[in-house]
Length: 453
Ligand code: SF4
Image (cartoon, rainbow, N blue to C red; front, side, top):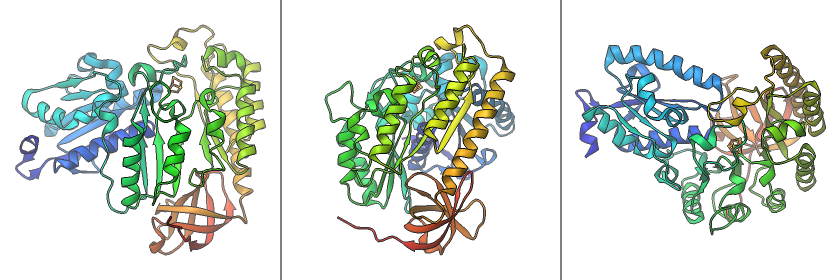
């Protein structure tokens, strides 16, 4: 009987969730919001209007951690004024565990990423008995199985297929805070996606820290087989997945591109460095030549595929020659986009103890050079789309103008175009008239006939 405890004099309690980090976190936030809404609680945009504020954290980079602690300072003041219940969930919670109460003595509950399915209980227990903490980890657990109740009109949805990671890249904290790999049963995944298709969802993004190793350690279907089965689900028109580890990108998976009509022509394939010396220090398990060869096979299979990636500069021991090799790889592949960062040492990781620290100024200079080059490549690729007719799934009003709709191509590029609101949440075709650095401009939108099989 949790619901009774969640009442205030004004009615049901209101909650607000602040999200930091990746799509996995975004989806965990959706799951918690759905569980609390299922108890009758109302989600509000502003923390100041909430009875319960949850901060879903990320500790992948130092900057996200700093932002989190400065937000907590502001929330402490809100709590003093209003008595707000404050919860901290996600990776920082897992990293700090019980110590979190020493650092943030005013919080009321804290859950690791494997325990977010206990959010209702946490709020209830915090209201009755004071602080509630849970950082236990257990394989394919409840957090993985929660299905957020997407509302009417939702066209895009995330579906978690696995969690955790066994790779231990030397800079990465994920295996320590999200635990070892655990995959969801394929039957459960397929049922969830079929239900989403029935509700009108057109695009699903399969989530996992390393989706390529889905079911590697258990007796169930492989990731390419899962993709083939999803390709046959009615209603679903587009399938994406993140994130892929280049070493685990098998020929069978590469062969799915260009062959499965619903699999979008986009892959996010982090390379991290173009130097084999640095890749070795990172414990990535592939060489730059192996990475380039896989990308070339992908492009051979699927001519129009868009490739995006992550890259770290200023990794310990990286010298100018190593950085030049990174730039050579970037100019060779010509990525559609790169998320690039200066190395930030993370607790527990081997890289945080490596010698050869790169001075901050030198690392920043490399980052700026890389980003400038990549901006030019992205712009040239977007300009090359001018005059082409392409499919867009509209999902919002454009950020540029209230008069325009916005959506994404199958290659995951943002397109803004003038069109009637009846085209919202629909598959349309547009002609690209202008390519910019971060988006495309479309015209002559036409609703796309959707073949229902
Ligand atoms: S594969 Fe990805 S999640 Fe796993 S340790 Fe490496 S960087 Fe982290």
